[in-house]
Image 1 (tube, rainbow, N blue to C red):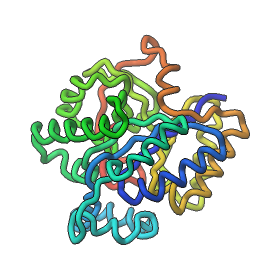
Image 2 (cartoon, helix red, strand yellow):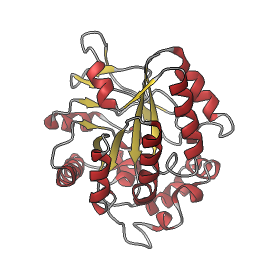
Image 3 (cartoon, one colour):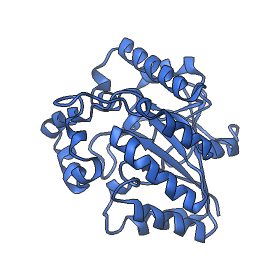
Length: 285
């Protein structure tokens, strides 16, 4: 029946501390694996307050998803009224537990919030320093270099892809495309998230929508967030996994999907930016 890849993004200190342990229990209960894309450095989530003023779609999303319930009140102050705590670097034992339980661990971010909100305004030197800090922190935590990168909020540009080349990633997961492709600038496979996030769709219909999309016998990637499926959406996530396994879908990490790719059979493509339903800012598609 195909594969369901779990791309699990950890964006915040709250998500690392509270969401990751809950997700590990869920995955253990269903005896499935996922790929955890970790934010390594400071949690500057409090700076999102600027977006509430600048971007009405962001405010709409925060209200629709009940953000206070997802992230907790402290998260809204980190990097402003409260110091910005380190995310994965604060929990080396938890990172070891993720790996010990057989899950794939990859690089997501150094400073997720600043990338998400400010990347177009930043210099090439800032992007280079961001990668150097994140890659160094990742290696300190895991004892190895990451073999994949998943950009925060699926936000990339040509400068990012140029810098990425020096890290020799085996694959990227930086887009919301419909199917895997080769980045024509890099000759690197892209394993995109093709399914919607829970927080992008009607909370009354999300499980049925996602379950119907994976019921076609193909391969799909579900973008999971530690703060969401590891929080108030845990029961809905369990239902999606239960439905997938019931119809014979193999639930895997993205490393497993990468091993199954035939690079000669997938097309080369150039990404573009687009505003998807339920999002507050454009994603690479």
